[in-house]
Image 1 (tube, rainbow, N blue to C red):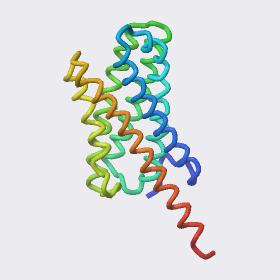
Image 2 (cartoon, helix red, strand yellow):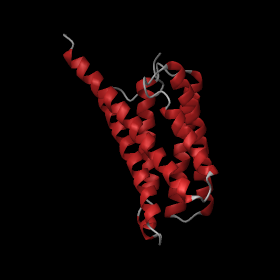
Image 3 (tube, rainbow, N blue to C red):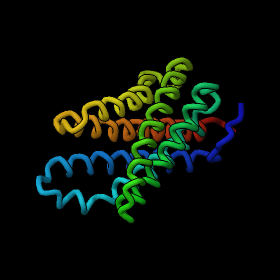
Image 4 (tube, rainbow, N blue to C red):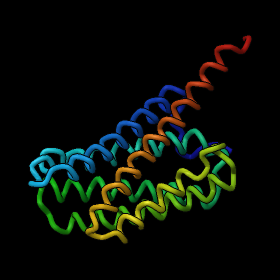
Length: 194
């Protein structure tokens, strides 16, 4: 079955994988720097990470979908759309909140985070059902479950920071899997006789 969102070729998928890796890294670094900065000075300097990271994660999600669209049906596609909308709301909310100081924008980003979580859970269940990521089938589901755990932890920084850092690490792993898959497909395509 043809993907309704195709990046066309291996190079765009490799770039999407790198975007996911970089976005997850920015997310994790931001969370770690916020945790070690008692006066909040580092937090203000790295606020831009929080709207660049979800933007990059969006590209990573598009690459993931483009690569595995044939394996992911119904519920997984719905999950992809929800995750995409959630990431878009995160970007919009963070830009509005951090750049323009609009309080309501931060509420939009919070709601977007929950929509992202719901989408990742749906996508993760379908990935497990289709066995799309052998040995890593649990990854999208685990990433989606980290969000509510982070919300439930509330202001308990001892739990919230590691959970958020693990969320970023999930995007790094997803990008790494996507990159290794795209690279191995490139190598196997070159090795085949014409």
